Image (cartoon, rainbow, N blue to C red):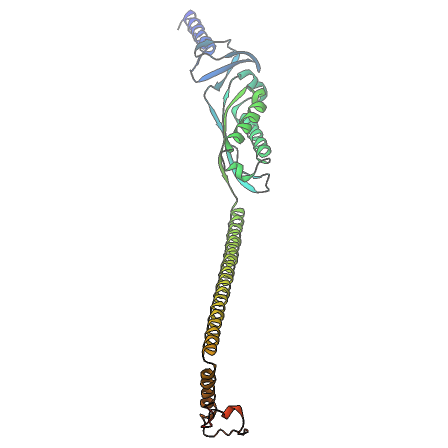
Length: 288
């Protein structure tokens, strides 16, 4: 091959290498930082064919949302209950220059964000109770965590899109302790209900006994009143009968006395013959 052709071929190859090393393509999902000897020269955030000096270097960053998943951890809440928490966050690189200057790459960013998320989650959850974490108040709690993480990560050229608690469970030993405490609470409530029931039953029985006593007393009073009225009526009738024929009444009463006294043949009476008891036994005693 002639020398001129060889030089031309070499020059063409060198030119091709120069052109290939000076042109690069940025995809729609990418953004880039052009570095010269490790120093950032310019930021490229629009897609297309771009040019650079052969000795410049292109560092690409993802434009899409990126995920970071810190490892699970145990956190003590304000009510001294411990829970196991798994979190995750989504972020986007908004300023490639700041991102490169502070964390360099996505791996370092994941480590820094994991520490920030862990610190924020511990601080916020340390001021709330388990009931708040499991209630509608969880939305506010997550908003507080997201705000803190966003503020702390802004110097990295990062925008925090979302921070979520994926799982918040009690540790196994804590769950068993809570279960046992729930059993104790239910037993205590059952005993209280039984005691209240026994008290109500005693009060009902006492009221019933008191009402029974009152009813019996009133019935006895009414009966004695009626009996007294009957006795008074009987005495009145006897008195009226005595006033009508006192002699007949005396005779009737004497006959009753004879019947009651002489009914038993073994009865012996030692009385004076002149006793008023025998006045109607004298054949002539009944006549005047």
